[in-house]
Length: 149
Image 1 (tube, rainbow, N blue to C red):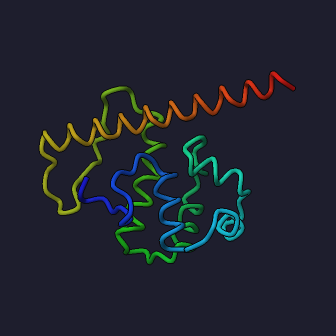
Image 2 (cartoon, rainbow, N blue to C red):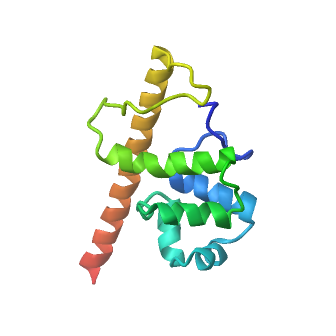
């Protein structure tokens, strides 16, 4: 996915929370607690988002605020990547297996080749599997804690 921006330190981004954490550290240069205060979110909730245990808020104003707090101008490719990773989880939530939305286009407006389409589909399916696995682990862990109480 060479058309998607990745922070310099990151070789592979699997989901929105990973990108948010790397951008928070690289651009805002803030710890989790400070950044969560800046965006009006509980640090625990932000941590869960960054680790992929829960989805971020679905309101566009939330992701706009994140971009602003990271200091990203509206036309920055980094901001586009933030939006891409943020919205993919909501699209994928409703997506049947092996289905891909029709609205995909490349940054240079060239048609998506069959090979690139397959790579993108496989990549998104892997992200969904990784997210579901993390969420399942998190839920099992919390269920064990609740049963102990």
